[in-house]
Image (cartoon, rainbow, N blue to C red; front, side):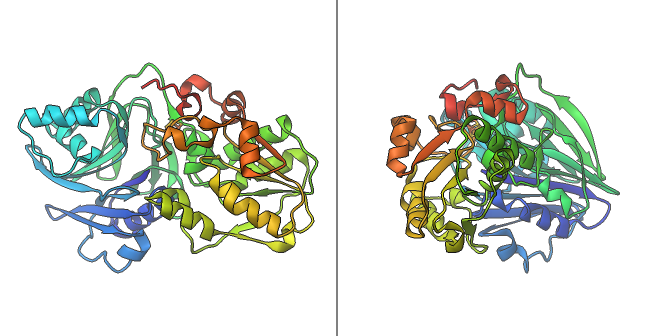
Length: 433
Ligand code: SF4
């Protein structure tokens, strides 16, 4: 997972670029990078670590009126290339499924590779174009998978979203400036308003704080990642016309309607389970209370690079609130159950130790059956609890009195989108792209 931000303004953008990327930190916490253009020169700087921790005192020399930025789980971006179109920097979110074939093909054409990363292949494919738009089209015709990308060339930005629109990408405007972001939560505190989402297959050219559509690559269907609303995106964001907060409340309400249970409180696995739990509480008229708080200085466990780090962070980040738990029966809402180990070994243990009575788990998405091929770091098939076990077996495994998941149909209704317009491969194990 990654976050992308780009901005063009009549004034120096470096503070806004820094903050725009900072507000996407939840999409990746291992690397971050910024690139700006000023005085005929493209500047680039990347760091390992969090945006605020690494860039706060390291923005000197990066001033400019146009720039792009990135925050990532996996690799340092932007990267810089020199080509027949001149120097450019590029950053990307997504996954190239046919990466190995493309690397072989490019090697046969005489290319050498510095890494085996998606971004290097994408950048080299784009560099084969007559210009950036032609290059993006050529790249799009070659790759199988998902992408959202921005390119900074001398004085211009190009932004592109794949024709299935797997990954979110949105345009914001304020007086004298335009921005492109993975999520609209970047816009709020920078004074931008949502203009619209980047359309499926759209290529934008951004110059002098204005954007123009230069191409739309046609597609037969869209495949918006349903997981964005369930877990990945920030609750303050609106993606493809649907508020993440409202989507989560709808999902929680659907669980309450289909799987009611008589308990003392509804609680959440924070933070991403909170919206689902509020929706469940509002629909069931059972009070919401916080049995756990997420410790403010902990990280997002899912965006840690290794399983050991994910397990450690998951254990550290959730602190039980004993007074909210003792002698109470409860529904606890979570966005998803991946392996079930956190629920079994951490949350349920902490709830029982603090005197919880019956524990009923409600899960916002259907049982996860398959890994993601489109750039979200879900596990291998055999790691997924629901791939190997029935719902009843998962319930026994995590040691709770009740367990229920939203159905796929309820998921589609909660998102207000036909199931053939969203990606549901995690749950169906069927891949349309
Ligand atoms: S497979 Fe799942 S996580 Fe991946 S794009 Fe589809 S819905 Fe999103």
